[in-house]
Image 1: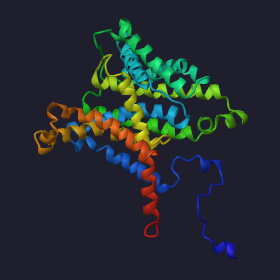
Image 2 (image 1 turned 60 degrees about the vertical axis):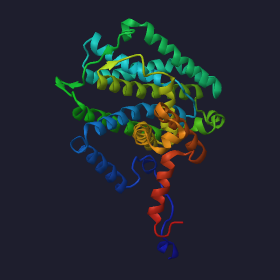
Image 3 (image 1 turned 90 degrees about the horizontal axis):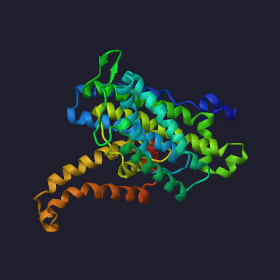
Image 4 (image 1 turned 120 degrees about the horizontal axis):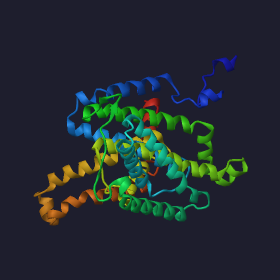
Length: 357
């Protein structure tokens, strides 16, 4: 009798279907759908500058999502992610220009080709870890950058390669207002794919490798397979993001895919939260908006008493670069779990309000 009056407390899941669901409640599913619908009205509400920032958040968010698979979910390290981002951009431009393949198909093909390259460079992960793996991925960064500079048939060499605008069956999606929906569609699909991947058997194997690789190996998980697979998956999403980046700018140059871009990708997932899908998007938005915020701050401080007292003069523009490094250090020290952890705490607080403590 007493058992019938007790109210269940906690998180009870009695089936695999309940355990692997993307949205734990109907409210969370409806909120996500409503959020996507509201975002669809952004081109008609915001100006061109804000719309451009939203497109950048979407493109870089897809690439950073791939890096989070390696670093956040598998526990590996990669500081050469920008090279795969660039390889996807050049591949998509090459396929559309050389073979006349529609851009609609070039973007996923670029992801597949980049994934193959990522699998090759991911082979050292089978035997290396920690600092040694970091050096190996750094070497991959410089190998691909040198390839970009020398393979004129593929990248154009010193001359930037052109990229066709996105089109679907002859309908051109030229312009930020139209291209925004292309990026939004890819963001939704990619994030749903990764969310489902992490809840699958292979996704749980990746997490097991991260948590304790010896225990994972004892349970029969092939460490070589899943460590290499994580680099292939990361390269795939980097390639898709790079392809979207190429067809957005309609030109691809060797510049912009260096080690500094790889560090920014790392900062995105660290600030957003390692091992968090939605945290990746939060961290990407933070890192895209941070330089713009620092630019506004530098303009506001120029000629002010603070500027005159510190004698910043022309060096005030370097506040943006300094802020990026400082923000990474602050998050590592005071919020190592990232913005996603803080967001979960906020939701838990209001879920139990006014009895939260």
